[in-house]
Image (tube, rainbow, N blue to C red; front, side, top):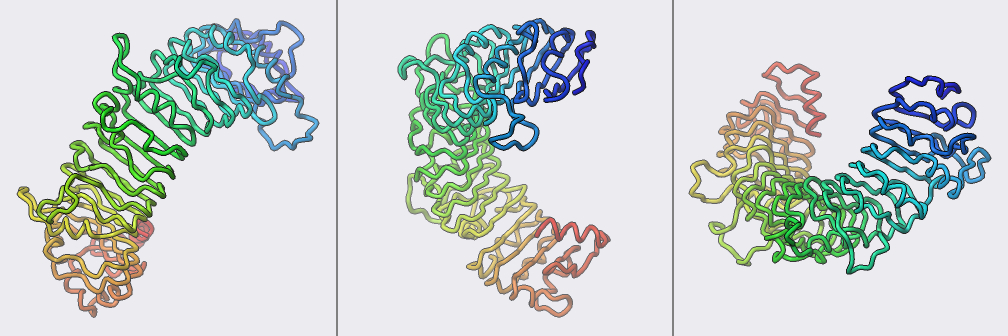
Length: 501
C-alpha cells in the first residue's frame, strides 16, 4: 500500500488496506471518510500508533463491513525484529480502530504475534455498535472471557473460531442471558467455552465444531415463556463435529416436542463418545438429510425409518455401528421396517451394520462400500403391497469392497429396470452375474474392477456371463472399455473410468 493514499479524500471503495512496515500506515485512513462498503485492514501486526487523532474510523459513517486482521501475511519467527506488536500494543491499536455505530458487520482476527486476548474495555467498544448484525471473533488465543454480545440487540450472525482458552461470559451459571434475535451461530475450536448466552431463536444454521456441548444442552432445556418462542423451534441445519462430550448428555425424546421441530439437515461427525445417537436429534418430521461419520463408539441409531421426510442418508466410518433400534427386536422379513421416501443412501466403512431398515423406494443412488449387504438382500427380496417392486426406481448402484458378497439375488435384480449406472469393485467373492442382467434395459454403464472371478466370466465374446451383459452400451472391465456402442469416444470412456474408480 503506497504512501499518500490518504490524500484521496473522495475515495469510496477500498476493499483492502495493507499495513506496511515501510509504506502506508494507519494515519492514511484518517481522512478517507467517504469510504463505504467493506474495509479489510490486514497485517495489523505491523501497525504503529498514529501521530494525530487516535480514532481513525469513527467518522466513516458509510462503512458497512470491517475486518481487523492481525495475522501476518508472511511467515515470521518468534524473534523477528519486524514484529512490533505485543498483546498490549495490539489492544491500543484496537481501541484506535473504534468504528462508527452504523457498522453492520465486524470481524476481529487475532494472532499469536498480535491480538492474543480481548481487552477489558471491549464491552464498551462493542455496545456502541447498536446496528451490528454480524460478528466474528477468530484466533484470540489467550482470551478467557466473552464480551456481553447478548446486549447487541440486532445481532443475527455470530462466529467464534479458534479461541482455545475462551470460557464464556462472567455471569453465573443460573443467570445466563439469551441472544434476542440470533439466527446463525458457529462455534469452532473452543473446547472450554461452556458459559455463554443461550440461543433459542436460531432459525438457520448451528455449527458446533470441537467445542463443548453444554451451550446447546442449556438452550434445549430452556423453558418457553410468553415473550420467547419454543427454543430452537426454527433451527433448520445442525452440525456437531469433533464433540468430546458424550452425545447422550443431550435431552431425550421428551424434548422433541419443543426442540428441533423444524430441523431439515443433521450432520454428526467425529464424535467419539456415546453409544447411541439421542432420539431428540432425529425426531423432526422435517428432517430430509442426515450425515453421520467417524463416530468410533457409536453402536445404535434411533428408528430413522419413522422420519417421514427423510430423503438422503449418509453413514461413514462407524466401525462399531450395529444399526437402528426399534421396539420389536426380532422381525420377520415381511415385518421388517422400511424407509418411506428415502431416495439416496450411502454407507461406507461400517462393517457391523446389519440391523437396518429396508429401502425399497430409493430413486437417486445406493452406495455400499466396505459394509454388510444384508439390508440390500432383504430389500431386494421383500414382499410389499407397493404398486412398484422394490428398487425399481433406483438409477445408480455402487457396491465396493464387500468380500462376503457371493451373489446378487436374481429375483430382486430383475426389478431394477430404471438402473443406469452399476459399479462393482473389490468384491473378490462375487463369482457371477445372474441372467436377470438382461432385464436391466435402462442400464447405460457397467463398471467392474478388481473382481477376479467376475472379470473372467465377463470377458467379451468369451466369458460365460457375456450374453447377459452384451446389451449394455458402455462396459468397463478393470479400466478397459470392452465396448462403446453409445459412441462416447475414448475421452468420455476415460472420464467414466475416473468417475467410478
